[in-house]
Amino acid sequence: MSTVAVTDDTFDAEVKNSSVPVVVDFWAEWCGPCKQIGPALEELAAEYGDKVKIAKVDVDNNPNAAAAMGVRGIPALFIFKDGQVISNRAGAAPKAALQSWIDESI
Image 1 (cartoon, rainbow, N blue to C red):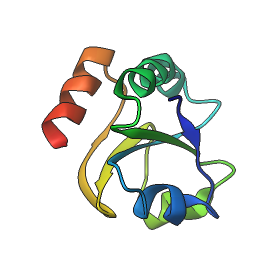
Image 2: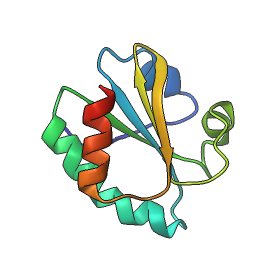
Image 3: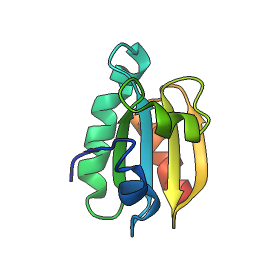
């Protein structure tokens, strides 16, 4: 599975109503650290397959979802399980650190 692009309109359906845990990456095209973790998130999406969904929300095009989550800086990462935020972190991190955070959270 690859990452899923989520919009303000699809946020509830893709994230809050998901049957599997969802990692949400709030990012923007102009954000260097966001681009830095992008490939790692793509790899993790492929490795987790159907066990975890990795969603990406472009904050420039979808400001409502970011505002609803209180995002002030990007990249901002949240893990949702059963429709609720169970963990969050800000800033870029290496793939191993992201994987460890996801594994510990779910």
